[in-house]
Image (cartoon, rainbow, N blue to C red; front, side, top):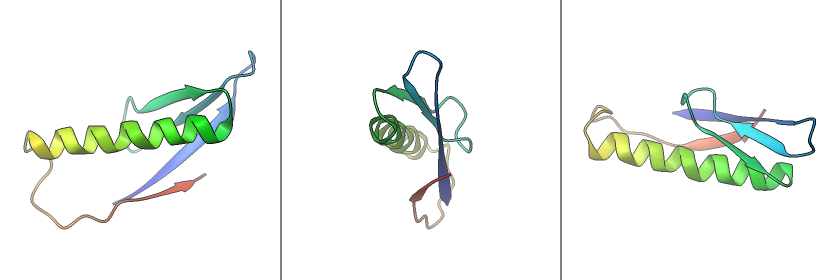
Length: 68
């Protein structure tokens, strides 16, 4: 699996980062790096939950994040 982190600056100055491949995974930060780091952590938590609850099939996975 390969995930992309997209980020943009909001009108109020905050940064928003999201992982489009994982609906609902988005995070705000004071900087682009902070927002992307928070989104990456959240994405890993979502993937861990899916594995724990057997929502993800038994397949080898390789996780990498790349900024858009």
